[in-house]
Image 1: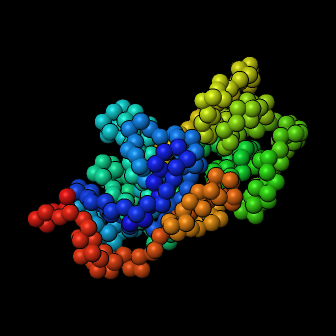
Image 2: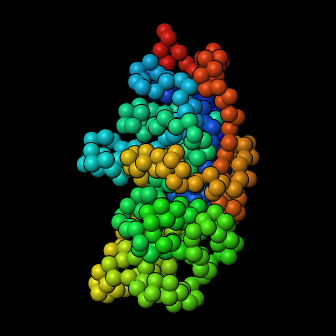
Image 3: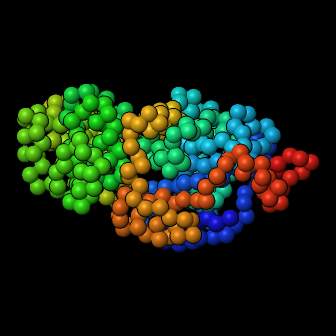
Length: 375
């Protein structure tokens, strides 16, 4: 099968490797769509690979596909099911895991981070994420491309919940990338008035087409005056900082209403820390500064329902589609900030059940089998 693997700093290759073998408690997924994330770019460019990650590593954690092989001990999941996968899973026994926050487990694993991921024609799904409920069967009206984008949507929803947004409040999203536009849609869905701010006029032009409900403001000059004008002198109730720039993070405090909430979405590189924050503004305005990372399985399922019910439009954020063999070109587009979401597509399964039945003999030729049990 073809895949995209990280071999070292700035060394990304399209490789031809064996289809992974699975065990009796595992699944084999035929990937249908996998989206490139900003963290994939940072891993490629900056060597942000976890110490326990095997090299070379197949990247990709935003994905969906069809189950084409199921181990004999797997319950519920069957060949032919279309599924999306919440990519982060924990040990299952620590305090974070039993509290429903397995994405914060200190021993967490993730596809495309320290396990082979989804920029490949097939993905092996180990026992733990199956047992922990990380796989979600897709509704008929949700495409695999939309399901792949549910992963970043669930991460934005995690940040959204930290801000306790209330209908009728004013909100600003700083950063008009795909994450920022997801944040804007969630805030609008909750009944807030939304402004999107970015340095790029071209990004804001795209924003106006995709998010006709949103106000837009270019750059930082005069931003404070604009904020207090559109909020009748109160300031913003909620601000999402969807660009990891220290100066931007520090400047948001002066834009806030009393009791305002700020979510710093996305980490600032270590060499740019610490970020200087005016703590008096926090004190006298009773501000709440929050952060968020990844998402829980519960949040992943909830946002998939948002897509299914038509509340959030993620498909409009896809600006390019590429086959895996052209994946390096797609990575270059993503690195240069061309468009919004770049999605790798794979040959579709015309009929998942038919595919599963007719191709088992071919798969069995490459998947080790012993006395009828998958190894």
